[in-house]
Image 1 (cartoon, rainbow, N blue to C red):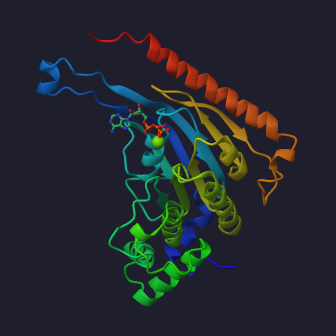
Image 2: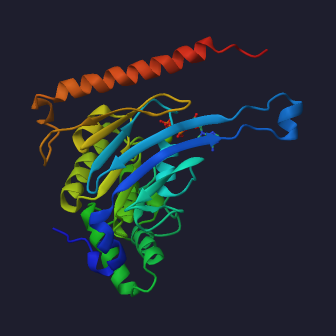
Image 3: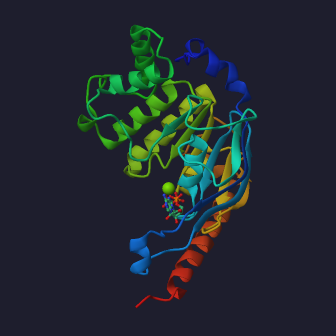
Length: 298
Ligand SMILES: Nc1ncnc2c1ncn2[C@@H]1O[C@H](COP(=O)(O)OP(=O)(O)OP(=O)(O)O)[C@@H](O)[C@H]1O
Ligand SMILES: [Mg+2]
C-alpha cells in the first residue's frame, strides 16, 4: 500500500483534516451579449442566471456527488470551487478562508483529460508536483510521480505520451496528477463520461479503492445514478436551470468498502435509486417542455 507523501507537502498536510468546504449564497450570472453587432442583428441577449443562491457545507473527508439535468450548472459550480471562475455573488471558503483562485489545496480532474501532449505520463505528473512544490528535488518529484503512477495502475506506461494512451489510461493520468500534489479536495467533472462501460466500471472501483486509502474530500459530477450510489457519502441533486439550486441532499448509508456486485442488496439501495431517477426525469422533462413551449423566432 502506498502512503501519500504528506511529509513533503507540509503546508497542505497540516490543513488536510480541516478542509471544511463551505459554499455560501453562491450565484452566477453570465452576462448577455450586448455588443454593437449583436444589437444591430437583434441578437443581443439578456443575462443568464445559471446558479441562484447555492448554499452547501461539505465536511472534511466526505465523498459528495453532484447530479442534475444537463446544463443546470454543475460544471459552473465546480469551476467556482476550483477557483477557475468567480461567483457573481456569494463566496466559497475552505477551512474558513475565502478562495481567491486556483490553489494547491484543490486538485481537478477534467472531463477532457487536459494533459500536456508533449510530456510523457511521468512528466505530466511530475510537472504538476513541481508547480506546487518547485523547491523539491527533481529526483523526489519523480519518485512521488512514480508512486502515483503505481497507485492508479499505470506501471509500464511512464514513458508514453498522451497520444499513445487509451481514454481510460489518460483519465488515470489525470487522476494521478490531481492526487500527486496531495490536495485536500479532489474535484472531478464527469471524469468517466467518455469511457466505455467496462473501463468506466473499472475506474470507479479504482476511485473507490483510492478513496478508502486516502479519504480526501471529493466532489464528483456525474450523470450516472449507479456511480453516485457506489461512491458517495452524500448526493446533491440539483434543480434544472436557469436559477438552478439544490433540490435535495441524499445520505448514502452503505457501509464501506463497497462492491458493485452486492450494493443493490442493501435495503436502501432501490429506494434511493428510484428517488434519483424520479428527480432527474422530472427535471429533464420540465427542461424539454420549456423548450417546446418557447416561441420560435422568425
Ligand atoms: N461562459 C459562459 N457564458 C455563458 N453561459 C454559460 C457559460 N458557461 C456556462 N453557461 C451556461 O450556464 C448553464 C450551466 O452550464 P454548465 O456547463 O455549468 O452546465 P452542466 O450542468 O455542467 O451541464 P452538463 O451536464 O451538460 O455538463 C448552461 O445554460 C450554459 O449554457
Ligand atoms: Mg458540465
